[in-house]
Length: 164
Image (cartoon, rainbow, N blue to C red; front, top):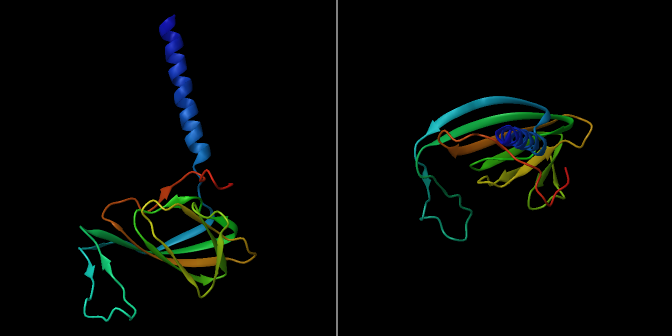
């Protein structure tokens, strides 16, 4: 009899854990995604020109190991959201139509980016979500560089300091 109670308790705990994980994780809705380039392999990258004077614009990029590159076109319909998520590497996001609001786990207030502007998602566990709070479709193009074979997107719970 005691074994049946323990078994029943374990089943209930597993059910609660699965339910909580499903409820807490956020998913995207109202988003159409097209991969323009999907998991394109890159070897190690080392862009670091020391001959550039320190007072001029510079770009540096160095990877250790192989990488996968993505070019992602997202159309976010009015009221749509990418859901809270992160990426294991950086993304350059170009807003090419409409406007999106970027909410980050650090700053839940959100910042609006209109067509013709861009933003950087640093990746590496930085949680964010994009939302279209407008009345017309918004479109973004993301250039992503991620560690080889890493998941491109990692769904996340709503940060404790943000409201859903």
